[in-house]
Image 1: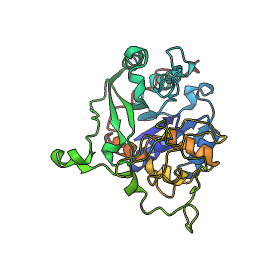
Image 2: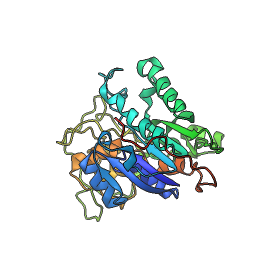
Image 3: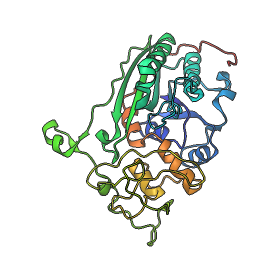
Image 4: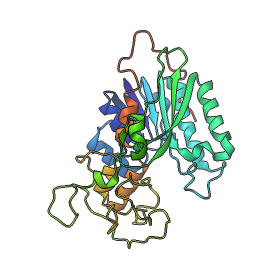
Length: 324
Protein backbone atom coordinates (compact mmCIF):
# COMPACT_ATOMS: atom_id res chain seq x y z
CA UNK A 1 0.00 0.00 0.00
CA UNK A 2 1.22 3.51 -0.82
CA UNK A 3 1.54 5.56 2.35
CA UNK A 4 1.69 9.32 2.99
CA UNK A 5 3.02 10.27 6.42
CA UNK A 6 2.34 13.58 8.16
CA UNK A 7 4.23 14.83 11.23
CA UNK A 8 6.66 11.97 10.57
CA UNK A 9 9.34 13.04 13.08
CA UNK A 10 12.37 10.77 13.00
CA UNK A 11 10.23 8.06 11.39
CA UNK A 12 9.20 5.53 14.05
CA UNK A 13 5.71 5.06 12.61
CA UNK A 14 7.02 5.05 9.03
CA UNK A 15 9.76 2.55 9.81
CA UNK A 16 7.17 0.18 11.24
CA UNK A 17 4.88 0.46 8.22
CA UNK A 18 7.86 0.00 5.91
CA UNK A 19 8.86 -3.18 7.75
CA UNK A 20 5.25 -4.35 7.44
CA UNK A 21 5.64 -4.24 3.68
CA UNK A 22 4.09 -0.89 2.77
CA UNK A 23 5.71 1.81 0.63
CA UNK A 24 6.16 5.29 2.12
CA UNK A 25 5.90 7.57 -0.92
CA UNK A 26 5.82 11.00 0.79
CA UNK A 27 6.39 12.29 4.31
CA UNK A 28 6.66 15.64 6.02
CA UNK A 29 7.89 17.33 9.18
CA UNK A 30 8.84 20.89 10.10
CA UNK A 31 11.73 19.91 12.41
CA UNK A 32 15.17 20.02 10.78
CA UNK A 33 16.80 17.34 12.95
CA UNK A 34 13.86 14.99 12.45
CA UNK A 35 13.97 15.41 8.68
CA UNK A 36 17.75 14.93 8.50
CA UNK A 37 17.53 11.77 10.61
CA UNK A 38 14.57 10.49 8.58
CA UNK A 39 16.31 11.17 5.26
CA UNK A 40 19.48 9.32 6.28
CA UNK A 41 17.64 6.28 7.68
CA UNK A 42 14.41 5.88 5.71
CA UNK A 43 14.40 7.85 2.47
CA UNK A 44 14.72 11.08 0.53
CA UNK A 45 10.96 11.40 0.04
CA UNK A 46 10.63 13.50 3.21
CA UNK A 47 9.69 17.18 2.80
CA UNK A 48 11.03 19.73 5.29
CA UNK A 49 8.31 22.35 5.77
CA UNK A 50 5.38 23.31 7.96
CA UNK A 51 2.41 21.26 6.76
CA UNK A 52 0.25 24.41 6.74
CA UNK A 53 2.49 25.76 3.96
CA UNK A 54 1.96 22.74 1.71
CA UNK A 55 -0.91 22.52 -0.78
CA UNK A 56 -2.86 19.27 -0.76
CA UNK A 57 -2.36 19.25 -4.54
CA UNK A 58 1.36 18.70 -4.01
CA UNK A 59 0.77 15.64 -1.83
CA UNK A 60 0.62 12.47 -3.94
CA UNK A 61 -2.38 10.15 -4.16
CA UNK A 62 -2.07 7.27 -1.70
CA UNK A 63 -3.81 4.30 -0.12
CA UNK A 64 -3.08 5.16 3.52
CA UNK A 65 -2.43 8.41 5.39
CA UNK A 66 -0.66 8.03 8.73
CA UNK A 67 0.23 10.66 11.27
CA UNK A 68 1.13 11.05 14.91
CA UNK A 69 -0.09 14.63 15.01
CA UNK A 70 1.68 16.85 17.58
CA UNK A 71 0.39 16.10 21.03
CA UNK A 72 1.82 18.74 23.37
CA UNK A 73 -1.53 20.47 23.67
CA UNK A 74 -3.31 17.22 24.50
CA UNK A 75 -0.92 15.49 26.88
CA UNK A 76 -1.75 15.00 30.55
CA UNK A 77 1.97 15.71 31.11
CA UNK A 78 1.21 19.31 30.10
CA UNK A 79 -0.35 20.76 33.24
CA UNK A 80 -1.31 23.92 31.34
CA UNK A 81 -3.26 22.12 28.64
CA UNK A 82 -6.65 23.51 27.73
CA UNK A 83 -9.15 23.26 24.92
CA UNK A 84 -8.04 26.55 23.36
CA UNK A 85 -4.38 25.50 23.01
CA UNK A 86 -3.46 26.42 19.42
CA UNK A 87 -1.46 23.20 19.07
CA UNK A 88 -4.70 21.24 19.48
CA UNK A 89 -5.71 22.54 16.05
CA UNK A 90 -2.89 20.72 14.27
CA UNK A 91 -5.07 17.66 13.89
CA UNK A 92 -7.02 19.78 11.39
CA UNK A 93 -4.04 19.54 9.03
CA UNK A 94 -4.32 15.75 9.13
CA UNK A 95 -8.08 16.03 8.62
CA UNK A 96 -7.57 18.37 5.64
CA UNK A 97 -5.29 15.93 3.84
CA UNK A 98 -7.56 12.96 4.55
CA UNK A 99 -10.66 14.87 3.43
CA UNK A 100 -9.17 15.97 0.11
CA UNK A 101 -7.00 12.97 -0.78
CA UNK A 102 -9.62 10.39 0.29
CA UNK A 103 -7.19 7.51 0.98
CA UNK A 104 -8.74 4.09 1.58
CA UNK A 105 -7.45 4.09 5.16
CA UNK A 106 -5.87 6.36 7.72
CA UNK A 107 -4.13 5.90 11.04
CA UNK A 108 -3.83 8.73 13.57
CA UNK A 109 -1.83 8.48 16.80
CA UNK A 110 -1.82 10.63 19.91
CA UNK A 111 -1.38 10.55 23.65
CA UNK A 112 -3.90 8.81 25.89
CA UNK A 113 -4.68 12.19 27.48
CA UNK A 114 -6.58 13.19 24.35
CA UNK A 115 -9.45 11.00 25.58
CA UNK A 116 -10.01 13.14 28.67
CA UNK A 117 -9.36 16.60 27.22
CA UNK A 118 -12.45 18.76 27.52
CA UNK A 119 -14.14 15.93 29.43
CA UNK A 120 -13.98 13.78 26.30
CA UNK A 121 -15.61 16.35 24.03
CA UNK A 122 -12.45 16.99 21.99
CA UNK A 123 -12.12 13.32 21.03
CA UNK A 124 -15.82 13.21 20.13
CA UNK A 125 -15.31 16.23 17.89
CA UNK A 126 -12.29 14.65 16.18
CA UNK A 127 -14.13 11.36 15.60
CA UNK A 128 -17.12 13.27 14.22
CA UNK A 129 -14.87 15.20 11.83
CA UNK A 130 -13.31 12.00 10.48
CA UNK A 131 -16.73 10.37 10.16
CA UNK A 132 -18.08 13.33 8.19
CA UNK A 133 -15.02 13.09 5.90
CA UNK A 134 -16.41 9.75 4.75
CA UNK A 135 -14.87 7.15 7.09
CA UNK A 136 -15.86 4.41 9.49
CA UNK A 137 -13.79 5.24 12.55
CA UNK A 138 -12.58 3.15 15.49
CA UNK A 139 -10.10 3.88 18.25
CA UNK A 140 -8.20 2.08 20.99
CA UNK A 141 -5.46 2.69 23.52
CA UNK A 142 -2.54 0.30 23.00
CA UNK A 143 0.30 -0.29 25.45
CA UNK A 144 3.61 -0.92 23.66
CA UNK A 145 4.65 -3.30 26.47
CA UNK A 146 1.79 -5.60 25.45
CA UNK A 147 3.51 -6.10 22.09
CA UNK A 148 7.06 -6.89 23.20
CA UNK A 149 8.42 -3.36 23.52
CA UNK A 150 10.43 -2.96 26.78
CA UNK A 151 8.47 0.14 27.75
CA UNK A 152 5.09 0.92 29.28
CA UNK A 153 3.78 3.34 26.69
CA UNK A 154 0.05 3.86 26.26
CA UNK A 155 -1.01 5.69 23.13
CA UNK A 156 -4.35 6.31 21.43
CA UNK A 157 -4.67 5.03 17.87
CA UNK A 158 -7.52 6.01 15.55
CA UNK A 159 -8.19 3.95 12.42
CA UNK A 160 -10.37 5.12 9.56
CA UNK A 161 -11.71 3.00 6.69
CA UNK A 162 -13.33 4.84 3.78
CA UNK A 163 -17.05 4.09 3.62
CA UNK A 164 -16.89 2.43 0.19
CA UNK A 165 -14.03 0.11 1.17
CA UNK A 166 -15.09 -3.34 2.33
CA UNK A 167 -12.01 -4.13 4.41
CA UNK A 168 -12.33 -4.07 8.18
CA UNK A 169 -9.15 -3.17 10.05
CA UNK A 170 -8.93 -4.76 13.49
CA UNK A 171 -6.61 -3.58 16.22
CA UNK A 172 -3.91 -6.17 16.99
CA UNK A 173 -4.30 -8.47 19.97
CA UNK A 174 -1.60 -8.30 22.68
CA UNK A 175 1.23 -10.79 22.45
CA UNK A 176 2.69 -10.04 25.90
CA UNK A 177 1.38 -9.48 29.43
CA UNK A 178 2.71 -8.89 32.96
CA UNK A 179 4.63 -11.92 34.23
CA UNK A 180 1.96 -12.81 36.78
CA UNK A 181 -0.76 -12.89 34.09
CA UNK A 182 1.12 -14.16 31.03
CA UNK A 183 0.72 -17.92 31.58
CA UNK A 184 -2.97 -17.69 32.36
CA UNK A 185 -3.55 -15.63 29.22
CA UNK A 186 -1.34 -17.81 27.04
CA UNK A 187 0.91 -14.84 26.25
CA UNK A 188 4.61 -14.08 26.56
CA UNK A 189 5.79 -12.10 29.59
CA UNK A 190 6.54 -8.41 29.20
CA UNK A 191 10.11 -7.69 28.05
CA UNK A 192 11.95 -5.96 30.89
CA UNK A 193 14.19 -2.94 30.39
CA UNK A 194 16.99 -4.79 32.17
CA UNK A 195 16.74 -7.67 29.68
CA UNK A 196 16.59 -5.32 26.70
CA UNK A 197 19.80 -3.55 27.72
CA UNK A 198 21.72 -6.44 29.29
CA UNK A 199 24.19 -6.77 26.39
CA UNK A 200 24.74 -3.06 25.81
CA UNK A 201 28.23 -2.03 26.99
CA UNK A 202 28.89 1.04 29.09
CA UNK A 203 29.33 4.18 26.96
CA UNK A 204 32.90 4.66 28.25
CA UNK A 205 33.97 1.16 27.13
CA UNK A 206 35.13 0.07 23.68
CA UNK A 207 32.13 -0.35 21.40
CA UNK A 208 30.93 0.41 17.88
CA UNK A 209 27.47 1.69 18.76
CA UNK A 210 26.27 4.98 17.31
CA UNK A 211 24.69 7.64 19.55
CA UNK A 212 25.91 5.85 22.68
CA UNK A 213 26.41 9.00 24.77
CA UNK A 214 24.37 10.07 27.77
CA UNK A 215 23.26 13.03 29.83
CA UNK A 216 25.55 13.71 32.80
CA UNK A 217 22.73 15.46 34.65
CA UNK A 218 22.84 14.41 38.28
CA UNK A 219 20.62 11.50 39.28
CA UNK A 220 17.71 12.25 41.58
CA UNK A 221 15.24 9.89 43.22
CA UNK A 222 12.32 12.11 44.17
CA UNK A 223 9.53 10.27 42.33
CA UNK A 224 9.07 12.89 39.65
CA UNK A 225 9.28 12.16 35.95
CA UNK A 226 12.90 11.43 35.03
CA UNK A 227 13.88 11.13 38.67
CA UNK A 228 12.38 7.75 39.48
CA UNK A 229 14.06 4.52 40.46
CA UNK A 230 13.92 2.12 37.50
CA UNK A 231 12.94 -1.50 38.16
CA UNK A 232 15.12 -3.61 35.81
CA UNK A 233 12.61 -6.48 35.96
CA UNK A 234 9.79 -4.44 34.41
CA UNK A 235 9.40 -2.55 31.16
CA UNK A 236 10.72 1.00 31.30
CA UNK A 237 8.40 3.86 32.21
CA UNK A 238 7.24 5.92 29.24
CA UNK A 239 10.04 7.60 27.32
CA UNK A 240 9.10 11.27 27.02
CA UNK A 241 10.18 14.19 24.87
CA UNK A 242 9.86 16.81 27.59
CA UNK A 243 12.55 19.46 27.55
CA UNK A 244 14.43 21.27 24.77
CA UNK A 245 17.36 20.95 22.38
CA UNK A 246 19.73 22.80 24.72
CA UNK A 247 20.15 19.98 27.22
CA UNK A 248 17.00 20.34 29.29
CA UNK A 249 15.43 17.04 28.27
CA UNK A 250 14.05 14.59 30.80
CA UNK A 251 16.02 11.34 30.52
CA UNK A 252 15.16 8.12 32.33
CA UNK A 253 17.62 6.38 34.63
CA UNK A 254 19.48 3.31 33.42
CA UNK A 255 17.98 0.10 34.88
CA UNK A 256 21.03 -0.20 37.16
CA UNK A 257 20.21 3.30 38.39
CA UNK A 258 23.83 4.47 38.23
CA UNK A 259 23.40 7.03 35.41
CA UNK A 260 20.98 8.29 32.78
CA UNK A 261 20.28 6.11 29.77
CA UNK A 262 22.29 6.89 26.66
CA UNK A 263 20.62 7.95 23.42
CA UNK A 264 21.24 4.46 22.02
CA UNK A 265 19.76 2.77 25.10
CA UNK A 266 16.67 4.95 25.00
CA UNK A 267 16.31 4.16 21.29
CA UNK A 268 16.43 0.44 22.12
CA UNK A 269 13.74 0.95 24.75
CA UNK A 270 11.66 2.55 21.97
CA UNK A 271 12.48 -0.48 19.74
CA UNK A 272 14.57 1.39 17.15
CA UNK A 273 17.09 -0.96 15.48
CA UNK A 274 20.79 -0.63 16.36
CA UNK A 275 21.66 0.63 12.88
CA UNK A 276 19.22 3.55 13.08
CA UNK A 277 21.44 6.63 13.51
CA UNK A 278 20.20 9.95 14.91
CA UNK A 279 21.83 12.77 12.95
CA UNK A 280 21.66 15.55 15.52
CA UNK A 281 23.05 16.53 18.88
CA UNK A 282 22.45 14.43 21.98
CA UNK A 283 19.61 16.51 23.43
CA UNK A 284 17.75 16.65 20.14
CA UNK A 285 18.18 12.89 19.69
CA UNK A 286 16.58 12.30 23.10
CA UNK A 287 13.68 14.52 22.00
CA UNK A 288 13.24 12.73 18.67
CA UNK A 289 13.13 9.35 20.41
CA UNK A 290 10.60 10.53 22.97
CA UNK A 291 8.30 11.91 20.27
CA UNK A 292 8.39 8.74 18.15
CA UNK A 293 5.95 5.89 17.83
CA UNK A 294 7.63 2.62 18.80
CA UNK A 295 8.64 1.06 15.44
CA UNK A 296 7.90 -2.47 16.69
CA UNK A 297 4.33 -1.55 17.60
CA UNK A 298 3.99 0.41 14.35
CA UNK A 299 5.00 -2.68 12.37
CA UNK A 300 2.42 -4.80 14.19
CA UNK A 301 -0.28 -2.22 13.44
CA UNK A 302 0.93 -1.91 9.84
CA UNK A 303 0.46 -5.64 9.39
CA UNK A 304 -3.26 -5.17 10.11
CA UNK A 305 -3.68 -3.25 6.86
CA UNK A 306 -4.07 -5.04 3.48
CA UNK A 307 -0.91 -5.34 1.37
CA UNK A 308 -2.86 -5.18 -1.90
CA UNK A 309 -4.62 -2.07 -3.20
CA UNK A 310 -7.50 -4.18 -4.52
CA UNK A 311 -9.42 -3.70 -7.74
CA UNK A 312 -11.73 -0.71 -8.26
CA UNK A 313 -11.18 1.13 -5.02
CA UNK A 314 -9.63 4.39 -6.12
CA UNK A 315 -12.03 7.22 -5.36
CA UNK A 316 -10.78 10.57 -6.62
CA UNK A 317 -9.65 13.35 -4.33
CA UNK A 318 -12.43 15.68 -3.30
CA UNK A 319 -10.42 18.82 -3.98
CA UNK A 320 -7.79 20.03 -6.40
CA UNK A 321 -7.15 23.52 -5.10
CA UNK A 322 -4.96 24.85 -2.34
CA UNK A 323 -6.76 25.01 1.01
CA UNK A 324 -6.23 27.15 4.06
